[in-house]
Length: 67
Image 1 (cartoon, one colour):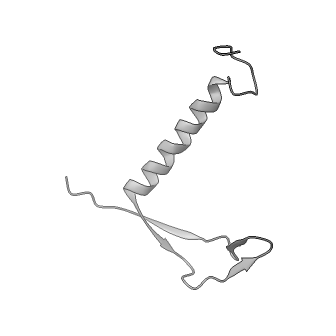
Image 2 (spheres, one colour):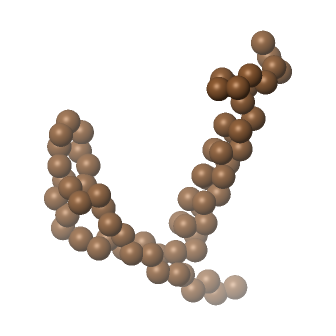
């Protein structure tokens, strides 16, 4: 079935488009903003996997790019 576009399968062109869109947004946030934790000593909950107890709230500050 190579080359056949089937909805809701591996052949869906929107699947790849959505993946690239998410990667672009994450790249933009990492390159253009400085991240800092709002709660530096936030506890880790383990139920059943470890995760931040308060959801890891962050502050984003624009970076000053020097070029």
